[in-house]
Every structure is written in structure tokens, then in C-alpha cells.
Length: 95
Length: 489
Image 1 (spheres, one colour):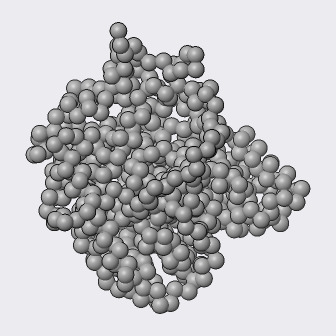
Image 2 (tube, each protein chain N blue to C red):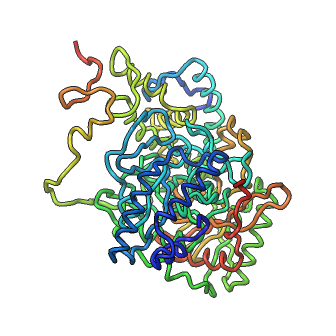
Image 3 (cartoon, chains in turn red, brown):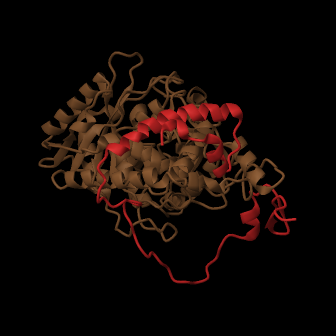
């Protein structure tokens, strides 16, 4: 888990983020420094400590299952880069 | 008129000494005169602002609405909060010409309270940064010294209030993004307890840490704003169903017998000697007002920045997955959807956002999740427990808001880790889910022009009443908040 091991190209693919070669190189060295710093968490004694996902957990926040007014279709599509027939258009996924 | 507080302005409007139109016009004129020097606003729609003010004036003339808490008060909005029909960019190119199709809950609340909601305030892209240099639309400058940064990520929100371009503003705070710029611009900035204010309509950065809060010129104004903004909302399931206290009536100036903790872990190396002196003097002032100062310990403080940059980036990498060129914003075409996502995001996001998405994706990825993310969540528990334990003996904790006064534009922009470390005193508050406020407590003496220094008061979960009361008593006994920047007219 040494900092040098971060494979920026692979992680960028996981994140669906196309990077230039220069960006990959720069990120690699900057993230190396940041990961070195983050390593200090290994010193903390976390034996038997429960993780906190949320500072103020509320559970089972529910509301009645009732039909309510919602955004009109054309409003929801208004900011889309490409639409047709009330739908979002994306590149072809299957042959 | 642009230097009035909320209560001064609303009482004049109710008496009809001034109209809501005159109030917003004074702000618009001020923006015209000074915003070229500081670039706090990304955009502003004067016609819409004037129309809202005219509606307030017409209602008053008809005998309606005089009791509204923010009657005619011009409130400007960070570009991360949705205002129906207006642009929303989060300081990013990726949203293109996005127009918000609905209002955030806080916007509805401000409008029902009679506020004039206007303008889009500059910010670090997706609220990621501490200087507002990460905006895709150019940096904001500090009104006290335009060669320096205003802080971030809500730099525009802090600078606009300091410069008299609005009476109050909204920002968001994930690791200090309200308190740090408030400190560096010499205004009041309040981060409410997680769950106090609805996040509906706030573009998510790190959902377990984000809160919306006010910037204002006085503690009373911040209290009045929180009275309007707070409360449970069925559209944000993390908002907490607790009554919203009448914060402003608790501002009596009497803090005798209140216990305030001083954490030794916050008086560290790296803390500028002038900031330390100023904060030491503020602590003595609190003591002279009758507060009891006690030493407290927050032993896991040193882990806060590392913990934060794991949790916040992990949550951000998930939240920002939605910007993929399908449903809104810019799109860069590709041969298949995967290529389109990658190209769109590669072209649309700036360097800091990319850095955090990569870091966040990495700490969540297979093989590293337990070592980084799960461990950080456990350390978060330790940090939260430190605070809960300290709050068993004290009503609030006092700290510097930042280790130094405002730094120069460009000084830290090539060193992300140094930039992250500038948030060292504000980050724990979000991890612990408590509340915090920054108020002006003096100025640097050596530099010219002089620069504001901020005092941070941290409070228990839902302990806003105590920190507002202490902050108000301090403010009224010192008057630092009345100082205004030497911005050319």
C-alpha cells in the first residue's frame, strides 16, 4: 500500500474519468504525497471501535406512500444535452 | 445603506423609511462599483431582484407581511444552491448552462421570510478548496487585500458580505467552507449542526458532512438567519425533527458562569504567532465577561485532516458520478456510453475535482476499502467521542478558525496537501457533526493592509444557542465586526 502503488490510469477508468498523460503523471506524484500523509491513520488505535457513517443517524425515516405532484417531464429534460420523444438520448449500448 | 445589519434594515423597511427596492438597489450599485475588484459574484439578475423587492413593497403598502423576519433583506446565494429559473454551475464548467428546475428548501424559506434572494456567488469548483482559486470562472479576491485569497470554498459568500454587496449570504460547509472564509474576510459565518438545516437543493459534495449556513455582518444577523433556515424537511431525510429555538432572544450579552473549553491540541506549531496572540487575547476577553475557561483535550485532532480527506473524497466520488453527460450539463460525445462519460468528465471537471475523485475512488476500491475508508470511519468515531466527552464539562470550545490570516493568491495552489492543512481547525466539527461559528476577533498588525483574524466557537450537537450567545457577547464587547475593508469606492 505504499503511495507509489497507486495506479492512476486504472483508478481513473473506475471513475470514468479520461485523463491526459500529463494529468496522470501530475496526479500520481500529488496523490503520492497525500497518501503518505494519510498513512498516519495507521497509528490510531481503532480496535473495537465502531465506524461512524453519519454523525446523527436517523433510521427508518418514512412518509406515507401517496401520489404527489412532481416535476413535469419536459422540465426534467430541459437541461439534457440530447433528448427525443420525452427521453434522454445516449450513444448506442447494444448492437 | 449597504452596511446595515438585518434588524436595522428590516425596522427601517417596516417603518417605510426606506423601501425594499432602495435596499436592493443599494446592493446592486455597490456590486457595480466594487465587484470588478473582488469577483464575488458569478452573475446577478437585477430585474428579478428588483421585482422581488417591488412585491415586498406592494405587500407592505397593502398592510401585509410586516412581521416577516427578513423583510426586504438582500441575501445572495452560493452557486451550489438551487434557485428556480436561475443558473447553477457549482463553479464548474461541467454543468454548462444548467438552469435549476426547483428551489432549494432554504430558498423557499428565505423567500417566505421576505428576503430578496439574488445573485450567484463564486466558489471553489463543487465546494472543493480553501481559497476559491478552484473556480472554473476565476478566483475571488479578499476585500481587505485584493492580492490575497478570500478563503473557500464559499469565498464569494464571505467576500460579498465583507464588501457590502449584500446584507447576508448563504454558503455551505463540508470541512470549513463557511467558517474559514468568514474568518479570512472578517465576517460572521455559522455552520449549523448536521441535520439542523435541510440540504434539499444543495448540490451534494460529501453528504454526511455538508451543511448550509449563513454569512452575516453580526452574530444577531446570523441567529436571525438560522431561525429562518432551520427545521426538519420531508425532502431531506437527514434533517432532524427538533424545534428551532428563537436564537436571537438568547443574545443577552450575559455569559457569566458559562464554561468554555480551550483545547491544547489546537495551539499547535504552524499556528501563526499573531493569530495565537489575537486568540489568546479573545480568550482573556471571554474570561473578563464572566465565562469560565477550562482546559479540554481532543486527543485525536491530529488525525482529522487525514480522516476528512478519505471520507469526503469517497463520498464525493460517489456523488459526482451523476455528472456524466446524460441528463444535464455538458456532453463530449464518444463511441459508446463509457467513452462519453470519460470524455465528458475529463473535459468538464477541473484539476482539484479530478484529484479528489481519483483519491475517493481509490480509497473505496477493492482491496483498499478496509485499510482506508473503514479505518477513517472508525477514527471519525474517536474524533466525535473526543468532542462529546469534552462537552460533558464545557458549553463550548474556543479555537482559532485558521492557522494564518489570508494567504496570497497562488501561494498554495500548486501544493494540494498544504492547502488541505489550512483547514486543520475547522474539519473536526464536520466529522463530529457538531456546530461552529467564526467571528472576527482582531487583525494582523504587521502586514499592510491589515488582515482579519477569526475566532471559532464550537458547540454541542444542536448547541447553536450557546455558541451564538457567547459569540454575541464577545462581539458586542469588542466591536471588531464593525470594521469594514478599505475597498475603493
